[in-house]
Length: 166
Image (cartoon, rainbow, N blue to C red; front, side):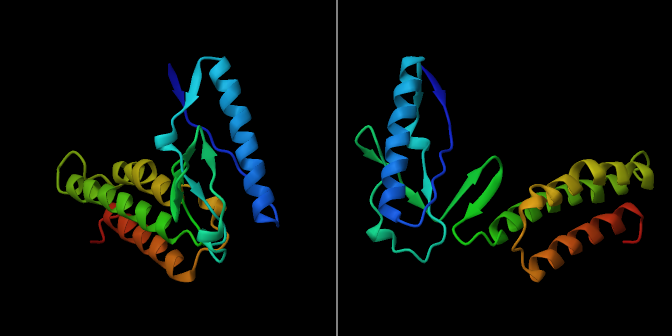
């Protein structure tokens, strides 16, 4: 049997009504998938609640096939790390680490005779570092000034390496 991962989003002011709607929709989607030879991998399912101010213990469970879907503080969806507060700091930190690894590649290539051309290094920056720092940038509506400064600092370091200022 084939496996499929999906996202179902619910919203509303009345928590119990929203969770009931999610459970109903989840059962309908599961029935349709089973008719078509597909299934939901419950082990890979997770739920997240925005905002966290709501008491998680009071939340009715989201259930599929008699199993409760785990409620988490953060999840990754399409490569974007979502946390309950939507402040994006965990996502930024994750991609800053990836950009630092790519910066090490540029630092290593800078010391070779065939990789030290600034134009080549800028091309690598555009292909390796900038996409990692810009990934999901359009959803950063509540990013803090501290996180913006960290992103800008990572870009500055990488560009200085490319231009041979370090």
